[in-house]
Image (cartoon, rainbow, N blue to C red; front, side):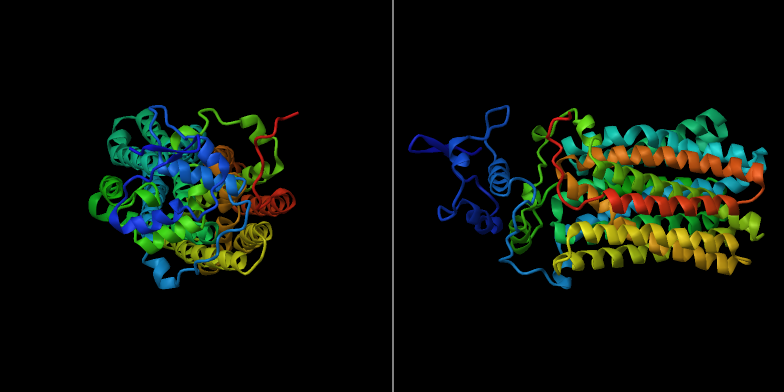
Length: 513
C-alpha cells in the first residue's frame, strides 16, 4: 500500500514499490521537476477501503492536464516505434490473442451455415424455416451487447472476454447433443451462443483502448478484425472436411474444445492493462504512458453502473454509429448465413465448392482490414484530422460493397460472382477503420456501452435481413433482388455517416434539455 506524506497541509503520495525494470519509468511521473497540478496535492484519491493507488494518481493528473481523454496535444518526445518494435511488442501479443478469439467467434457462427444444408435435407426444412434457425443465434446476440458493454466498461475486457469465450465454446460443444435432442434445445443452444458472443467486440474495443494510443488503434482493430474474418474462412473451408471425417457435428466439437484452450492461454499470458504486465519492456511501458494511454478510465469504480442512455442517444454522432453498425451487420449476416446456399442454388455447385467460393472473400477481407488500418493510422500521423480519416474509411467501406453487390447480382457464373463478392468484402473491411474505431474516439469512457447499443441495433437489422432473405426468396424466387436492396441500403448508410459522424470527443455529460 502507498503511504501519504504532507507538503504544507496538502496531501500527496509516496511512490509505491514497482518491479525493478519499471522503476525508472515510474520515477519520471513522480519527479518533483514535473509541474503537477495543485488538485493532485490537495486531494487524496482513495478507494472504498481507504487505500491509495498510483494508477489513480496518474490517471487523475493526466485527465486534469488534458481536460480528460486527449483534448491536449500528446507528448511527442518519444519517437514512433519501428515496425519491428511494434510487431514484437507486448501490446501486439495481446491483440493477437484477441484476433484468435474473434477467429473462434466467427468460426463457431459459420459452422451452422455449412451444416444447415445437410440438416435441412435430413429434416425437410424449407428456406424460411432455415432462416429462422439461422437467426436463433441473433436472438441471444440481441440481448447481450448492452449488458456486456456495461460489464466491459466496469470490469475490463480481459475478464468479460474470458467468460464470453468460455460460454460460447460450451454452446458450440453442446450443439450436437442439442440437435439430436429436440428442435427447442437446438434453438436454445444457438441463442446461448449469441448471448456469449455479444460481448466479444465490446471487449476487444476496451482492450485496444487500454493498450494502444490513438495513432495505433486502427491497426490494432485491423489485426483483431483480420482474425474475425479469417474465422469465417476457417469455418467455411474446414467444416465440410471435418464433416466428411467426423460427421455433421465434427466441427462443433473441434471448435468448442479450441475455445476452452484459448481461455487457459488468455488468462495466464495476458494482462488487463500495460502497467500490470510482468512481461512488458521498459521502453514499451514508457511509450504507452507518454502517449497518455492511462487517461482512459479503466478502473471499475470510476465507471457509472447505469450509463446515461438518454444523453448518449441525444447526440447525432451516436446515431451515426448505430446506423453504420446496423448496415454493417445487415450485410455481414446476410452473406454469412446465405452465401453457401446462394452458390449452391444459383450456380449449382456442391457444398464443398460453395464453402470455398464463400471463404475466399473473407481471406481478402482479413488482409485488407490490416492494410486499411495501417493507412488510416498513417493519415492521422501525417496530420489528417481524425474526423476526415474516419469518414473516408467508412465511405469506402459502404460504397464499395454497394457497387460490388450490383455486380454480384448480375454475375453469370460462380467465378465472376466470387470475384464481385471478394471485391465487396475487401472494400467493406475499410469500415473497421471507420465506425468500429470511432467508438473510442467520441467517448472512451463509454465505448463499451456505446458499442453494445450499436450492436443491438445491428442485431435487429441482422435478424430482419437473415429471416427476410429467406422469406424474400420464397416469395419472389430470386436472391438477386435482395442483393440489390442491400446495395441501396449501403449507399444511404454511407451518406448518413458522412453527415453526422465525428472523430472528436463528444461531451455526454451535458444535461439533456
